[in-house]
Figure 1 (cartoon, one colour):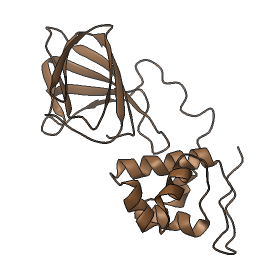
Figure 2 (figure 1 turned 30 degrees about the vertical axis):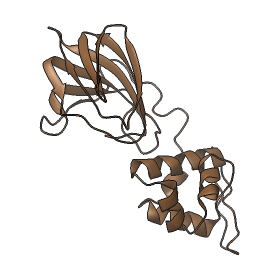
Figure 3 (figure 1 turned 60 degrees about the vertical axis):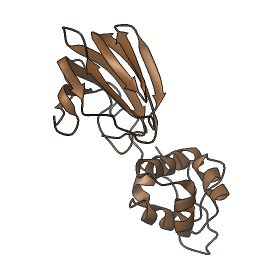
Figure 4 (figure 1 turned 45 degrees about the horizontal axis):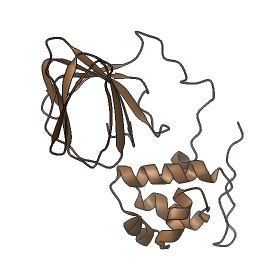
Length: 204
């Protein structure tokens, strides 16, 4: 796969020659993960909000000096913005080989483990896990963050709290919600529950 071509320095109007959609998606991911608004990041990069919005949506490309200011404000680096993964690498993850992570009870909840469907990597825009919740297990209080989440209950019964609403779900039920709404969940059944859970941007 061809590597992106960066300009050699020239004038401040030099543009980055790469896939603008991919670059924009990376910029937006980094901004949202750090909880920055378009206005705050635009001010740090010394550009207009409208231009930054166009860049994030793949409709414009930043100059190299501007990209330097953006990654500095995002505490990132230009290499990550153009990072590519091999087409044959990390595509299939066989049953029994996926990492299983037990969450810290004090920070993430009691009796919960995550089976990584997408291994953690800065190269992914999505985060996907199977949440396994032991009987009586629950997440550690309502949390809020930027992004969107979708889930499908594979087995068991859970209570999902979104804002001030409580939903009781069982195997075969699905859900979707804005991550900025306070949310938490708990196993209300007598057996272990499992939820196929996807969210963006990655949060843990």
